[in-house]
Image (cartoon, rainbow, N blue to C red):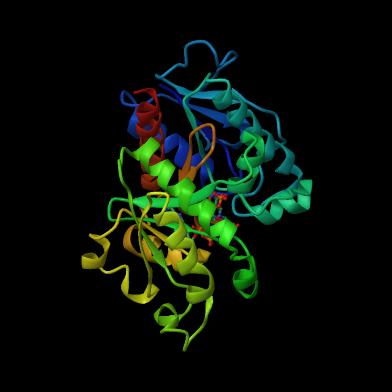
Length: 319
Ligand SMILES: NC(=O)C1=CN([C@@H]2O[C@H](COP(=O)(O)OP(=O)(O)OC[C@H]3O[C@@H](n4cnc5c(N)ncnc54)[C@H](O)[C@@H]3O)[C@@H](O)[C@H]2O)C=CC1
Ligand SMILES: NCC(=O)COP(=O)(O)O
């Protein structure tokens, strides 16, 4: 079992948490870092791996070396490195698709630097990985011990949410979530709670109509396909401890509705997973943390949790 870590934004904390996670998981889970060794923290005891299909060393930090350019100043993204950051994600995905590695764990990227430096046309890894995997739609899920959440719409402006929230998108998100929890998380009949879009889930149409016009009909249709769906629920009351015991995942209508509760509950332990890909991808739930980059202060807990989750998902697919 080997999980590859893609370098992410070299000016962020990605290289640091990869090295710290490697140390923490030594003897438990082999990893392979894909990136430019010049971007590793000073003094990292690394070894270059020439052939990723061969044995991966576990005694020193193993690097599938790429050549992106000199190290940036910590906390200051250099768009000149954008092509390299993207290439690492492509390399990791190809290795995973070929079965050379068991999955990828992506360190955070700085989306603006990739757009500026390489015209990156995707809002994040999630959509880029869907393209690399040859699938039309995937689902972003964030998971910790206390909660799993899925945002139906992801990185779009809040003013665009009602328009982009179509019955097709909601239905496909629910189907992919259902199948992903069955396949990768061992839940035979996942209980899926679905949030409304409006306050009080619309309060019978007094505070918005999306629940009546769109969400309810989609849930009714998918119940006919055998999905165990609860809702639409008022989003403000579905995340307290008692409510969370009633479902396995909360499907939310937009990014912050989903990510605020999980990052509040467990920022250190949260993991970002892409469901619906032909290979396994996880990621820490946090970003590049430019404010602490290069200071040795970064907490690797979320990266460690993401690597463990990728390994568990890979094991589940092998059964
Ligand atoms: N998967 C990905 O590629 C992701 C990328 N991002 C990107 O990261 C950049 C910064 O995003 P922000 O919203 O500022 O969130 P952030 O998660 O980078 O930082 C928020 C706060 O949490 C702290 N923090 C984050 N991770 C930490 C860790 N491991 N240890 C200690 N402290 C930590 C930071 O120092 C900062 O104070 C943006 O460009 C965003 O697009 C954000 C989330 C995921
Ligand atoms: N807010 C979550 C996030 O930015 C992660 O996006 P992605 O790069 O995993 O698509």
